[in-house]
Length: 354
Image (cartoon, rainbow, N blue to C red; front, side, top):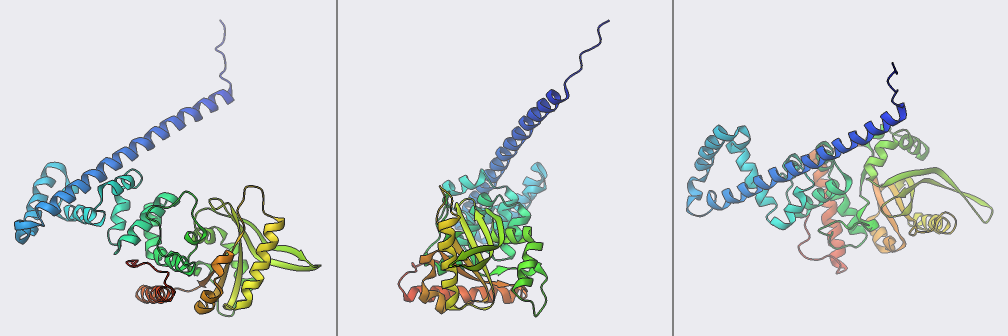
């Protein structure tokens, strides 16, 4: 009797991997369709309730009607349609009133993502977080974290420094440098003590490189620390060198313990010129720079118009204040930045913060 042929191990592994990929991809597509259908249903219900229950003649007893509807629907379709959830659907329809725009989001965000966006106060902030969720592939947990850490306000600060009057409604496939930076950067995860120097700061960043890249944002890849440049026979060292995949640019980062000084601009310009000449590869855009300071000098940065030279200045905070104080500080900084741009006639009307 002829023994059964042995299945080659590599053939089995390859076929298993292919079938597994097909199953996982199909499940992912199915999940996306179900999520989009559910979100579409909730938006339609919310809009209908807003028009028929909370508006017009029924508004005076709308709350009672909502409770009764919730009881009836929950009895038939489950707890997901209780009055408190119906109210969330109304909030959803009111927060995203344009059906064409929200339809594009439904195909890529889950209902749980949308629930995190409902408390966000302004439309520009909501759209910022929604677009970043898609571009950065944020989980619900990461979206919640970014909202808590005021990613919108910090991105606005960097954008305003670059003199960009308004963020685009939809993120372009290749964003401008002004749309990938923040100000300030929160480096509280480094665990630095009082009295640290620049070497301590750099070493802490390298120890927590994954967290630092997460704070920088998606697309940054670490290249080198203490990048050596020989100019006129003299050695110069750039603190950190990154590459941004979507921008297709080298990103030079300098760390400064104290307040920003105008001389820092000349130093960064020198580094960028050298990188452009000796490190830039075919197909890449010109290198850009990020100067991280313990304290910024807003007026100097504005007068120097550093964004024209591809340089952004941002503060870094190694300790975060309580939530209320953090919100006040960022709000005050945004108001001051908008006032500076308004004086230059740059800022468009109607540009609001969260």
